[in-house]
Length: 399
Image 1 (cartoon, rainbow, N blue to C red):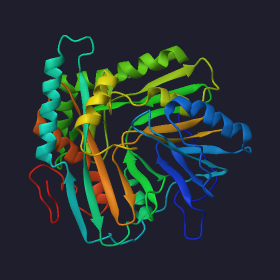
Image 2 (cartoon, one colour; image 1 turned 120 degrees about the vertical axis):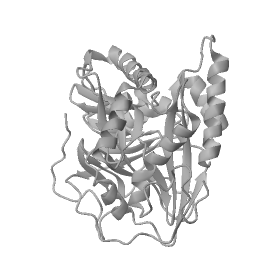
Image 3 (tube, helix red, strand yellow; image 1 turned 90 degrees about the vertical axis):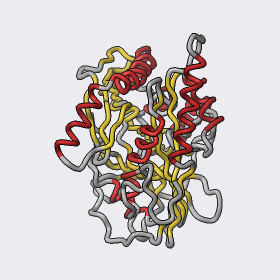
Image 4 (cartoon, rainbow, N blue to C red; image 1 turned 45 degrees about the vertical axis):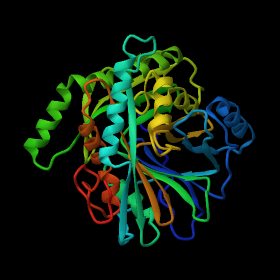
């Protein structure tokens, strides 16, 4: 099921175009929202349905709503109303030089992150036997990148979009200073796509870094597919999504079971889910909000995992591990998990990456997994893809 918008234009704004409020290009199609900023009144998840309904009741035909839902459902979202939407594959990577020189600071360092993982594992062990025993938690760490010149968003988006397995995205965020602020990334994970009465989801959980040689890469993927720890982590996510979607669906299935999927830098366990809605008019944005956040980015039980995340992660998530996407006046649209992303403002970028922690997780192995997940964005910024791996300290980095 692919949603295609066929008007011919670039997904990235050209000089002189109206500002881009959001843009997505990837396996689910290519779409951009441009024009004078018309924000949807901001609010938490609990008020989303009423706010979006008012927009479409008052809007002209052809209006779409797109943007970002925050990680925490109680925080305000950032959505934009646009009257124009166009789509085609992006142009080749612009010949824009890297915004050097670049400095990178890990917050927290890989060693400090491993200590947080150990702390979470201790909480899991202490909670065994509780009614709400912690079964999984996803912990994130960040990299702060400072560039010598303004980071070129169009070039960054084009580089991220060179990987056909991801959806490259950008969403304008509320300004926190003089420089505009955007969330940009290349996510491999489809949260929810809707076309008429048909829906699809492709949750990912369980990851391994890809290797340079064919034989080593095959060995890593085979080990991931056999890993009891990773399959258990993945099963939590699939069961959660199926349980939440089931009341809204006449049909719901995962016909292929759990399989391997990959980006240029990572292997993942993935399960493709498809269904048919009882009410075909249910908006995609409300289904996405129903699912978000999944155990793939939070943990289980969700409330207990979210509470621990707020207490021990040193950097607030904001829109990282939220959802990004769009919804049209008919309720169709596509929403993606906001991972492999960075918040960018002028010369500064904050990169985010997380790993799922379950009993049996190795703290330094989880730190290495987050380091590998930074790879695509680091490369797109002109830095070594392995710059955030434990033990590697490029110029300017404190790991």
